[in-house]
Image 1: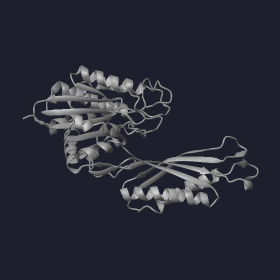
Image 2: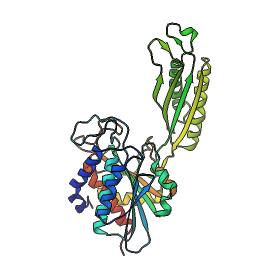
Image 3: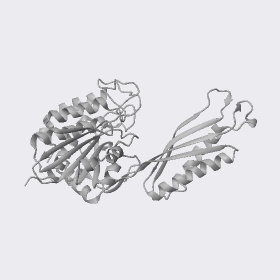
Image 4: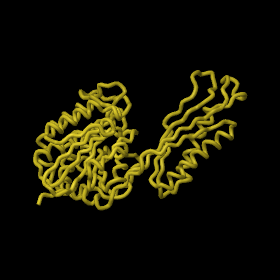
Length: 391
């Protein structure tokens, strides 16, 4: 079973939705226009609409038959706070805002599945379409769960997908177990003693101390983490000083920590504080560490992964369903939904033969490959028809 013919028919329309969303990006919990577009289309197709969960979230409910079974399908809607470097017609119209992770495509993909299922109703049960805000650091999935998502909209299983620029278009990674890492944040404030840049011996330079902390932290990955395990420490911000001839009083470092196992996460939290404080103390400086635990690892359930793989094979062919790819150190707040309900998170390929769709996520030149839209929508539709079969 290739891409569903009816979905292929309105694929150009899906591309229009996606490009409109790309041109009008909104940050987490601010997706007012986006959620309005989603709600209007669901209502147009006769799907029951619920708004207001996690502020800007939208839930569509489509019922058919009386089996009592239910499936949840999720898409994220928010953009990133970054400037777009593309020049095509649908580039972002909002300065400092960009869909650099493909959430515009995820939203359009789920809308395409919703349109098809509302038209055909070739299933017996209930489909919940979860359009979630604030995946990019805001934990919108957790907010929806905490506000009673699965109490209000019960699901036997929940499924999501994410585009992957490293996987060829027409292939998908469907893997059981841990597929994405825990995503934590760390901030380190180094306090020294300010002074004239020409007299460093009477100052305590927090820039020097902070630099040594950055280097020392990498030993936690290379020398304290089990080589058969994985961890990442990335210091992504370093702020200090305001003049070229002044040694500042304070330096601030910020970054992210990614781990796959709870014991490694615990170790990193403990050792990062130890390394930062001891390195600072060696220079008569002080380091204060704030470690904030973020998204837990994304762990696919075995039975639901097999079901997702079966549906993917119906659309793509068995040989195009990748079952043994290693985990990726990115994080995903779909993990919160998988803690509450069994399910599977699928990585869907978007790399075209011409290289389209191959720019990495979170890059200012990224763009979602619209050729993936009917593929992803067909996967969601096939999954629903498989899991909620008509008698």
